[in-house]
Image (tube, rainbow, N blue to C red; front, side):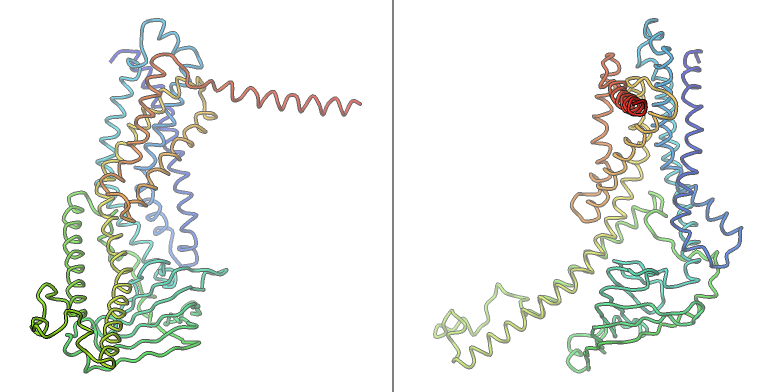
Length: 484
């Protein structure tokens, strides 16, 4: 390796390792702060906290590497430009492309390492970290309740609500609780506009006080046939206030090292994600087909193309209602309206369930493609950082840090936006996972072109100088007023 390559690599690696450790530390502190309320006061020991932080830090490495590459590339080239070393190299006939070559090889290796890490270490660390967090949350089961989703961690119950609010987040809005204890589907369903968690610390029951809602009991169950349906009772009642007690006595004895959550998208390797996605798609398609068949049976529209034999009679009118008297016509219309309303209600009730299933499937799809796309983030940000550093000609942590934060926030925002579009089925996961790369890669190519041609996109001094002059004038003005 030539001395020039060694010098350029050293100029890059020194800030890279420093910034990487600083970034990981900042990300860990931010995450620990977010999880502080979940861990504090649960009686966990120092060993548990250290294990949790260790696995958490491993999950943050794939995020920290791209930021470190971006920041260190801006700093390295900024330092070379600020000290006129870059100009000296150019005068000696060494182009920016030649200077970038050792850094490019290193960044390619880093992207490959990032992919291996993201596909092997990251899933394992996510698996351990999430199970530790869930187990410690079970010391206080109310913390398991997450807004906007069906919470199934409490055995024999599913609990869903739209929002948690209040000082202690113990108030719930639009609550739905389903009792699954008989293993026959949702036999008992309680819905309410608002609810309140009133359990005391250490109680064996999770107590929910619900207000303004309905209590619905259906002995049919999920496995009951249509013929049995009319023979079984069901009841519905409204209430102003209703108390639900859920036995959570087993939660207090939770082993913090249990590993019950195993199939989340971030916990699976690519080789495991593919069969998981196939199975989820198969189940999703079967559920839709089954719902369609049941709807057709309810509507009695299994064979619409073949008219009933009664309509083939030449003495009957093609307009069905004309074959009945007024009273019978009213009965037919009422029956048709009732059938349509029942079918419409069934579709509306199933829509949210299918939407959540589709969203879950999209999450696995997005993770599959994003695992590869995000591994290339160091390379994409490198092509932005190197020319940006050579153009602004500023080293150190000041200006490069600001620019790195701005660029990465833009990248992260676009990436998150693509993820949201994918989850809502607005964009295919295969496109949404690459959207940040597709947008920022042309920008990196543009900056590289400008830098290799020696053309500045902007002069940072033109931004800083007016600010400095403004404060200088402001200081002189105050001094003059003081002297007067």
